[in-house]
Amino acid sequence: MSDPINFDFDEYIRQSEPDKQQKGYIWQTAIGLQDVDGLKPSAYLIQTAKKNIDGDITLQEADELIHSYYESKSARLDTERRTEEADKVSARIAQLLSEDAFVFSPEQLIAIHRRLFDGIYKFAGKIRNYNISKKEWVLRGKSVVYAGSDTIRDTLNYDFDLEKSFDYRGLGIDKSIRHITDFISNLWQIHPFGEGNTRTTAVFTIKYLSSLGFEVSNTLFADNSWYFRNALVRANYADIQRGIYEDKVYLEQFFRNLILGEDNDMKNRYLLILSDDPHAGKIGDNGKIGDKKSAINTRTKAAILSFMQGKGAVKASQIAEAIHLQPSRTRDYLAELVSDGVIIAEGANRNRVYRLK
Image (cartoon, rainbow, N blue to C red; front, side):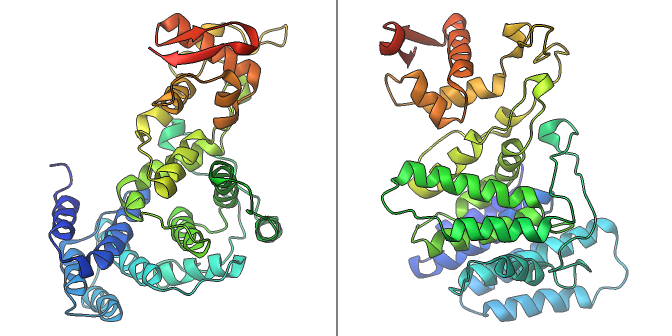
């Protein structure tokens, strides 16, 4: 098995008594979220988590044990420091997720970052005063454009004020999820801290959704934390000259799985930007995208097929709304999928519908 620690932990939860499973799910989420930064917990952290699940120690005692464990160690290699970070932050996430207290505000977001990374980063709980970029695997080394350091505080206040005044009443679950997708995507793009933004965003998201009355499955973050990060990246990256646009469909599918319990396929390879065709998405002299076949984004086609799963006949307008595409571009994608023999078109003009083959 590729990850024996997580497999053993998952099996342990399944075999636990019902009254212990909630604590198990919290720990599983806390540990799984470390994967967004490629961090893995130690065996000592797993054993400490099991003691808490069994009721032998409290969450506070678990946190103190982890702290004491690393205090007793002298100089450490970089790999050991990364494991230390994974262990300490896991214990702190478990504590935060076990607490009901929550206030919807930028200060709450900052407080979460401070609690997670105090003693790990010197800038824990501090808004960055410098600009950043991060090479992303899913973008083949490119970076999302994050908020400039001089606009972070104002942008945070603006987004929180806008969300606080938003009225979900009568909106319906589909539009509510789409709105939540937009809010969390925009919040993450600000990237207010030097490091630890995705883990902070994930904890904030879980607590915010709970405050709205959603019963979310935290284990989805544990099992798909890297997908969550990559979906946030794709929701905030565009390279129009190459025919690449901000695409929130992957993040929306994550939230539909999280909130509605749907089973949308979440594979990181679907999100990977293709770079093997230098002509893909290149804009010609006539202002139109040249080489239509190569310009069509394979990842977006996968998103269309995922949306169509189990839905029978759907119209192009439904697909366009669901995956945030212009109708004309949606019809181009659908024409390509029909040509590929993946879907079939029935009817003509306004009555035309599409089905999976």
